[in-house]
Image (cartoon, rainbow, N blue to C red; front, side, top):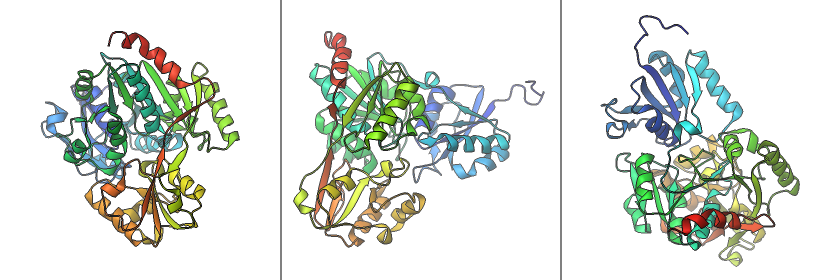
Amino acid sequence: MKTSGKDRGRRRRVLILGAGGRDFHNFNTVFRDAPAYEVVGFTAAQIPNIAGRVYPAELAGPLYPAGIPVYAEAEMEELITSRAIDEVILSYSDLSHISVMHIASRAVARGADFRLLSARSTMLRSTRPVVSICAVRTGAGKSPLARLVARVLREQGLRVAVVRHPMPYGDLVKEAVQRFATLADLAEADCTIEEREEYEPHIAAGDLVFAGVDYERVLRRAEAEADVILWDGGNNDLPFFQPDLEIVLADPHRPGHETTYYPGEANLLRADVVVLTKVDTADPQDVRDVEENVRRVNPRATVIKTAMPVRLDDASAVRGKRALVIEDGPTLTHGGMAYGAGTLAATRAGAAQLVDPRPYAVGSIKLVFEAFPQLGPVLPAMGYGDEQVRDLEATIRAVPCEVVVVASPVDLRRLMQIDKPAVRVGYEVEEMGEPKLTPILREFAAPYAAHA
């Protein structure tokens, strides 16, 4: 392609489409110190209250003394035209393949190139061994599997640092590198419900948790305190670190999604081990179909089946009662599920009725139901900031139920006033049949444990 005289020497103008996580990482690893590019802006999707911010100069580097603005993704076409964008980079996850191509078509029609960055371009290398936990869709069960993996590695005498996919919802400069060792650390950092759902179970098990915005710095901090790095991924995103053992989850409750969502299919193609989760509650034919797809797409991967039984801490409190079920938020929203573990637990416990919260939704929670019409008669545990937590609390108060079933991984009773009896749902991974994951992890850990 020939370059016109007026364009020769001009920095290539880039717009990064994101959701407040992968987009910042792609900028940091590929564009921050690249003088051939000028990142004009980020756009925001999936997460509320992200648009309108600025990626700060302290993180953006010397090429961006004023920082970089964050726009709403709906402004993409106008930005391509008004800001003379040459290239649009898709940098968020859990999109169907057809949704990716719709975004690409919009960009190309306005005259911008459209690009996806590769794993090799964006992964950081660690001085420690890395085990990654990723998935083909949000809500596949990464968190409980990550807890199992961390426990097995600890049992081999290794110090484990869990590094979580970013959730930078607050002050980005303060959140550049985060280290959590106690629940008090979460409170001091003013973590959202979504952050607590991911961090608290690891902390309760005794592992250090690291997160942030600048993952080169996050990784080096974690390496200083650990023998092994456990990447606990978000959504169905690729790992930020180059794994030495790459574990990917596939959910038979959503058969076919393993090959039709981005970048989940890329995870599947890369996997060393594929774990079929929730086999105990999925349709047996769906389990067979997903296993067949996995073996066809990635025949070199070891395929493992696991159960994820759900347990109520007091089933008798639910039996015969009108119950409000609160499910994990991301699983229901961009994860596309209509229900989750709370629904299964309440139904099995003999709830007389699952009370539909939609007519009683308040403020931002009402907007969530409008944005995700696939939701069943359940309440997603949304809490991206104080206002949404207040709206969630007000919605719970308004629902005419006799008991609240909380299936969020975090105990919401500690974060808000629930004015009705509340019971919690727990769920952990259990290995089924052969092969099992534990022997694979022990074999992986053996050479590192010998020198720990």
